[in-house]
Picture (tube, helix red, strand yellow):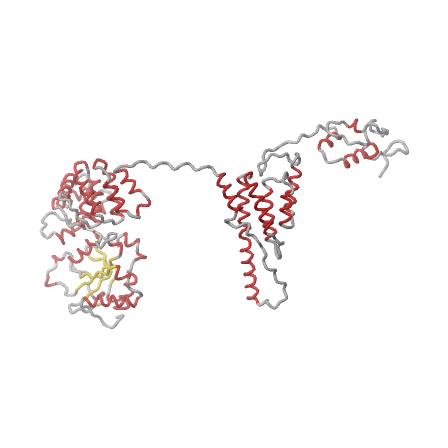
Length: 600
């Protein structure tokens, strides 16, 4: 090293010859007192030479206060940046406990055995903090999961570690408790995971034919983790602490006291209502006083019965009695909703004043709400109880012209066409106005909504395949709509001697209306209609057809079609296509039908 510029023979003093490091609050002059001050060119007396100053700085202990004293700067006070992730307040890089605590964490992270982990935790009780226990569990899982050979573990070591965590877990925060729970659960599942890994490796080795190689086999698993089972003391203690830290749940609100109609309305809105609907409704209705049964509540009840096909006589009689009692306060828009379940469920109430009451309401409200009037007549048509006076009114030119310009003109015309069909087939003594032929439209131009929604549950496809293999494709028609607009499932044309004829060679339709064709000119061939009676064609838990189904079958029979019903119970009992073909053969032969070789 070059000599400092100055007098010949002079040298820079070594730091050990007289330099004293300045402590906090000391000045450099005090630190350099008592030593000879060499004269250096370009530097004031009393200041050390640059090289000697550098040596002093390099040899000084790492202390912010001492270095700041040497550099003639004010000492830097340690600052606290708030709580860290473990919840304690420590100055960054300093403080009375920061060094030992961080040192213990490094020792835990570098431990080479579970025994060493336990030793570091047990021998330093004053330096152990809450976040050290997750570090120890994480290191333990790393050690036990190491391959090819984990270090040996003694049961006493794991039990001591478990007891140490249990003893200190009341001081943990919620984050530390969650981390310890997660790591303990991983340690409990570790033996099963390693056993599965060994089985997989053995199976792959056998599959590849590598058993003859001299590869070193893995040692048997000696993991002893019975100290961390899912129901062990460690997991129970941590789970108890976790539940203790959770905020208390507020008490459930007291259910409001419902009376009469309110209870019935709440029952209809309950999502758990489908379990025992009839009994629940009957009990709520029995507890209600007459003044509590409002039109809104009864409309909800009627809509629910119709929607879910619940043919409950006690509830339907209650609706009929309410309609009779409240006749003066009800308009036709409310009455159409109250009458809906009677027609859909094919139920004629026992209330003697039910029909006269409806006739009076129709006479009073017919011109106010045309669509509601037609809806009420549709429900009565399904019950075969059409009042002549109301029919005269809805078939009048004034009513038809009035509804022609409304948004619901098409649906009203469809309903009027059905009413006209009912008059033609069921009321031969009616001599009033009829729907003009130019205003008539097909009643049901396509399958009903319920059939389209449940088509994947229907037996129609398998019955069609059975008929194809039994009769041939030319001897039946599927989904044919016959005048005046009724859809048929399967239609056969049969000669007078009972032979099944090809449908395409015959007119599949019978003349409508039947009275328009003289008996002498009628086709002698019969039309046989196979009607599928699916489960949703009936009222729930009963054998009564829904009103629309019963009306269709009744009108088809009155038009001259021979009906062959196929109930869903019989179709569901057939196992496979061969049994179904045998079932269809028996059904057709029971009508006296015969055909050629199987398949046409």
